Amino acid sequence: MRLGIDIGGTILRSLGGGPAKGSLIEGAAEGVRRLVEMFHPNNVFLLSKAKNEKTVLRTLQDLLENNFFSATGVLPTKVFFLKTAKEKIEEIHRLGLSHMIDNAPALIITLRGKIENLFLFRPKGRQVAPRGVHLIADWSQIVDILERDLRDRGQA
Image (tube, rainbow, N blue to C red):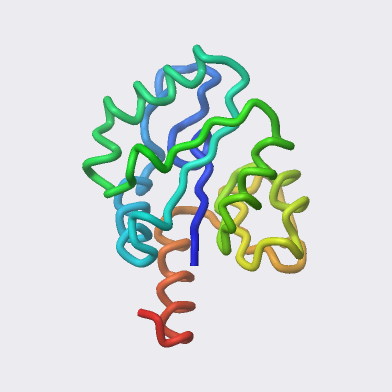
């Protein structure tokens, strides 16, 4: 089993600006740490769409300033920045992910039927979960679902 996690809007607050820009979303460090324990560090990947080098550097700086790697056990070598959604989808397939957490509905819907376990993080508005997609409000909910799933499979 291999897990992919988006960064902007899922781990870090929106990179778009504001006073909280670059801070961790509540519960992200603890939630990701628990997922790394469940999946093993070699099987957890961060994937982010970043159109330019400035965004890549800012995102890495934010992760480092928040001590994200040491707090979670995510390996810095497992972080990927892709210029487009298409490249991100291709990388998800190349990595052979079985689980993906992202806040982009279009990406999650595109992956339906191709990735076994999809999680749409903090969906906006009153969305109904598309078939095969979990709508997730916070990190503790993701951890609870995956712990229960692994326990049911006899892998926890």
